[in-house]
Every structure is written in C-alpha cells, then in structure tokens.
Length: 131
Image (tube, rainbow, N blue to C red; front, top):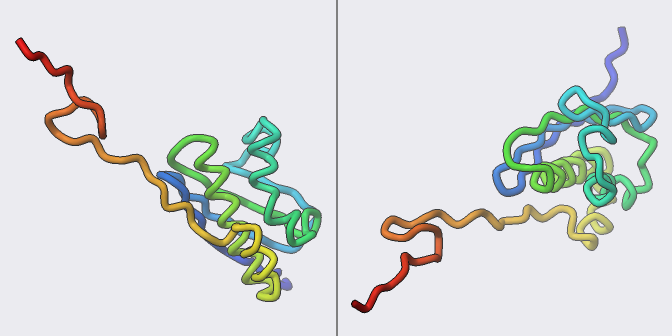
C-alpha cells in the first residue's frame, strides 16, 4: 500500500488550538468530524479559514482534516488559518513571501487580560464611595 504524504501543523489564537493534517486531494475540509460549511456557517469565518489557500492558489489541491478545541468560533478560525499557513509552508517554502506579506504567518499574541484581586475585572474598579 502506497503511503500518501501528510503534512501536520498546529495553529493557536487566544485560547484556541487547531491541529491539521493536510494531504493531496480535491479540497475537502473536515473540522472536528463535521463539514467546513457546517462548522463555520458565516462567510467571514469561512473566508478567514480559506485565506491562506486562496493566497497560495491551492483551494482545491489539498484535503484538510482539522481538530480544534478551546475558545470560540473566531479564535478557532484564526487558529485554523495559522495552521493551514504553516502546513502550506511545509509543502512549498517558496510560498513564504506571499503568505508573509498577507500577514498569515504571525501568531496573534492578543490574549484576555487576567482579572486582578480587589476589583471586579481586569481593569474595572469597584465603585468608589466618598462617604
């Protein structure tokens, strides 16, 4: 049995983690066992996920099997986008300049700021009473 080449990559955003397995195929995308359109129902989230493939002009070239966990839909879409970009780099290092110019290779470092003791949130203070 001939083994097909498989590219594995990880992407993260906020508290979301996406692990991806990319093989040569017809463009089928499975996320957590569900179809791509079912998992990310809105066009902005779908565009976020497909952006690296569109930049590389490889939308129908690879089958993607993605496992995401943590966070919400936006964070997961961002994590998947980074994972796809990293996997595409493994396939063809010449794509680096085009992916980098689109900003697809940098991990978004923004995280939720922690809540501090003695106040109700990260920045908010309890109401001050003068008397």
